[in-house]
Image (cartoon, rainbow, N blue to C red; front, side, top):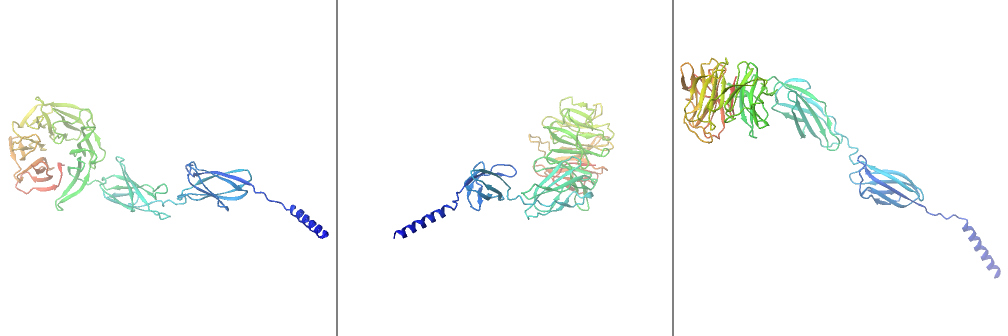
Length: 502
């Protein structure tokens, strides 16, 4: 028995010594720190999920983008950062015992791999083409490699005043532009935007509109913003409609009373600028607008009734400033006073004869009444009185090319009131040689007024405005024969005023 006990003790000691020869592994740990930021701006990304593989230990970045993973066993890992709207970022790291490993994640947004639209290709009009209409269909092509929706932007610029038309958020690849100027070169460019990438620009294309037609009629229409806008047009009797109507002045400016001079081929007109009314000139197509007056503005009783006149050679203009009449060169030089009313009455209208020897004037008091119509010479001497000592309104002066006749209008009702309403205004022709005044408004409808008459170029007809005497109805431009006054009046332009026919 004793022998067996000794054997067991020996066996136990042997086992004990054998076990002590095996190594015991001790776990060692390190720390992972880092920060999550946006790739381009380096702004911190909060609540980004940071995980390590293969352990799947996870933490979230704080408000400044920082994170800490503690007690990470030694070894090789893949660390990733994920956040909605960003591409997942990966970094390989090795954790060493008692060492802090730092990693920075620069996360790209999930559109990082998105491709921009293809560069737009301008199709029509063909680059450099000429003789285009004033309404043009602009077409182009483009597409998006990722099938993202594209919005286009069109920019259109001209070569005479450098104004830019910008149209945004175009869905189709066609856009029709209208009301372009005649005889003008336009430049256009398309930008494509998928709302993800920077916009992509096309090349710049160019085209020219056709030469301005010889529009001989000028008139004014009231725009919706209450500004007056000047137009030109031709009237084709056979078609019985307005033809080649061209908008000459912008609706953002108040422009009125157009007067064309054939010699200079310029149109003079009135325009409001800096709260004053001044004389301007422009080309027949509305380009090259230049201010003429500056030191002395155009002013008087009613700016809508004030009229001015060219010299026949197109070098000078006469205009009024309250009770004074001035002459000025078309370039703004040579301002000179040539007449002043002796009684302080306002000069509202003037017309200069073709030979520049006679000036017809209409004056009135501050209410628009106490009207006088008379002529003076260039020295300011009174030549002939045509109208005086009458009740009611008058105006519409135009001297015939041979100095034989003068057109004017007068409200034969003699009505006078504070709102300047006229009840029965008719057109008259005054013959200088005989001193005879003839009413030529026989065909005028009752309850209407004939206003602003002008001789036609051959002086066999006149162009004028007819409107209801209620003071609020639309005005229309007509023409009629001077001699055959029983002939029917012909409507030329609807909703138009202040005609000129050269």
